[in-house]
Amino acid sequence: MTVLDEIIAGVREDLAERMATRPLAELQAIVEAMPPALPVLPALRGDGLGVIAEVKRASPSKGHLAAISDPASLAGEYAAGGASAISVLTEQRRFNGSLADLEAVRQAVPTPLLRKDFVVTEYQLWEGRAAGADLALLIVAALTDAELTGFLALGDELGITCLVEAHTADEVRRAVDAGSELIGVNNRNLKTLDVDLAAFEQLAGLVPAAAVKVAESGILGLADAQRMADAGADAVLVGEALVTGGDPRAAVAAMRALSAT
Image (cartoon, rainbow, N blue to C red; front, side, top):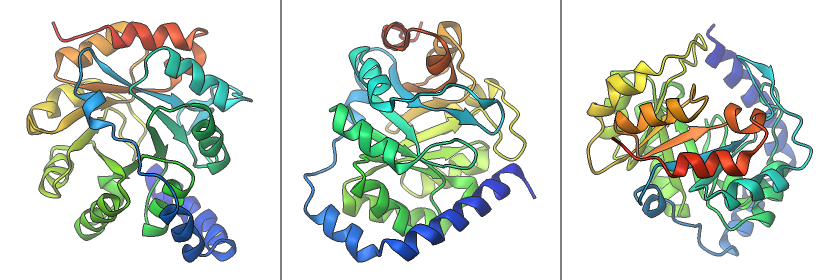
């Protein structure tokens, strides 16, 4: 069993508990009464390097990263630094996140929000939107082609922008074939947790020019962010470097000022 398999097994157990206590119909009623989700693609296509700044307490590879007792305050710093979007980890076992974090951040900032989790059911898309998410992460390695296209279709229905994450050439092809407009290349192999920035460099050319390209994982500073921009990234998704660096506002602003050379 891979690390990804283990994470998803835990996600399904926790999801079953939530589904038993909060019916889908309740989430649908909440979503139907909400204003439209915020668009994010225009911001990611804009000038400079887009930054998706992450509220991230822990990870399977590094363990504890930061306490983050006030995720709303951290999100406020990201927004002040010019973050294009803010990613909030909601997986609890390996990342120590929660939907409560997402709801708190939604109340604090007007920035588009990504619910960062391991989506394996349509329920989670409704759940994320009900908590205030404007984006959802879809991991190609965790989904069949039918699931991927079905979740993208539901995302369109809900007004959610889906960040479709790939790590191999075949996964990029599957993301493109499914019609993804926002494609992330994860430099981390979720099956082994190994990280190599060359992954984005090798795969970025497979993403159509019309799609927004996001480099994910392993971006530990400005040099790494510049390397990804030079390789064709429209945006970077950064967590660890921001929550451990001491000045998240300045770090986001510095990355936003980068552009391909």
